[in-house]
Image (cartoon, rainbow over all chains, first blue to last red):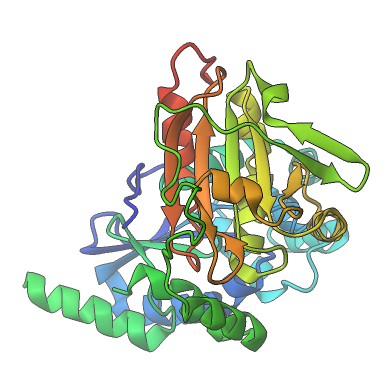
Length: 176
Length: 200
């Protein structure tokens, strides 16, 4: 079973306390339909688990298969610079059918991007960060999207909310 | 936690029935059949051995030879079939990793028993930017030479070889046929190659 090489930390985009007993990391692609399918499930898991879960997201765009994935990742990283990463992350997964530059720029404006920030996202200013996520993922055994890691271990089981919540509650009960 | 071999079934089952059926059909077969031809190797070429030479079509009008890449590490990827879902995901991953392989000065080559025209259509559909070689006639001969031909199904196994600049096998891995082996093992093997340029 593959092991995460770089632990989730302050450099990551996270929701929930970093020292939560359960750390769920997703390597995702904003245009990947399976990631889109997992999105509401993972939201439900976060809601159910509250502060006992830290959810983190890293970029794994398969740009040849998904022509808008890299650009979408750029906009999410740009949003992070003004503290709006998760709003952009959610907007992208809620509008997977509209990830062209014009649509991305529209979401960006709604989140308070100025022209310079939009320009930087369109020009690939965050490419190095995205590449770092991608390469780190490959080295940790990510072979497609979405790939989930639970407390540093690759999780290959079902990704529906009920299964994940049951699994996490079981893990919590064991550690009490 | 799931069994790794079952991952693809679960992963694809929600959305795409045809993928699930395809993976299930392959999964029904034993994973590591011995090659039935007696005078051919029945286990993968060993680490430290010279990689068997080959010349295969990379396009309907073009051949490539392994020896043509001497001086560069070669990542040789045997896979069962164009279009099948796991292969699709696997080649998509390697396609995204081309800049990483370039950092190692390494060449990646895909090989399956599909014909050159089939490869051409598959590569165009998936925008693949590395060669897919047609081990088509005699069918599977190179896979047999590498000891990774599944004679029961009539396809190459899902096998990875990392060959150094001098043509010696330095790492090999045979994955269960329905499991995308990813690339972590490939990168670790490339990291360990002697005398090769390593990425910064």
